[in-house]
Length: 323
Image 1 (cartoon, rainbow, N blue to C red):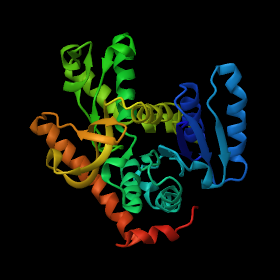
Image 2: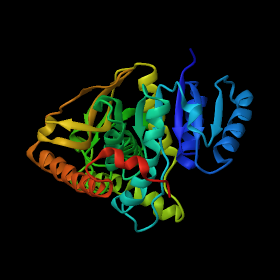
Image 3: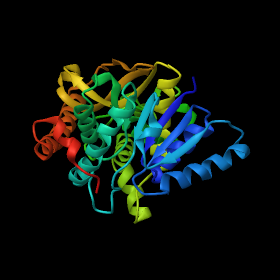
Image 4: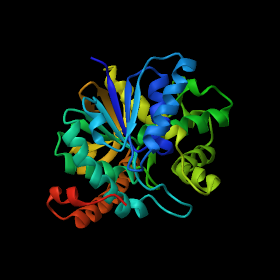
């Protein structure tokens, strides 16, 4: 049986994610978008590149969700992109309607899949996706920490003029202004970052990581980041399809870990064929615990807004149409 990944949304993030999957030879791709011809056109273009890239993975594109049947992994990227001056929270209401129209189609056509949410605000949309699927929490996760940690890894490597391959990093919390980069768990060949740079320089790197998405938005002016987010989603999909048991930061539902309950937040998890296999609890200082709690509470406020929008009955989201 051929492996299949469904990507919902054929915009910059979705199409680039499909490209990453194909060129890594991970699986066939089913690309879906509400805009007539968009997914089909990009799928054909990517298919025509296959002889040049040297892979035999197949890709199809459509407005119909029927093509995602049999997908082991579904990546949801559809939604409005951030504009300059817009926070991720500003997007919650509009993108909740879009995601609310997508998830019932995913459930109907790929009921056994593992879901990765990329749409912003990431943590809130992951919560909404879990609520609407009614799937076990280990099968619904958000792409956040992989991206934020990758940004931090690059910033550190750039600052120290070192290879990015020598840098590991960990970013927890919500995917937004309140994220929690952890200098103690950011290392260069095992050496903690605070031992290599003075505190002021370390903090500059942490703040640039928090502002990483906004920095790209400001430069692009008419869009938001898509290359790094696409690679991050592909990394997570690869960990699932190849049953890699990788330790990656991801947005998941917490049920008491780190003193947090009934909230979706970025933490280190082990990811394999069944989705989230384990939530890993790192020892945190009091300051780190406080920052993580504050970040989770910011997410919780957006979650409440989604609850108010859709009502207490999750099935109400099924009637919401995409914008």
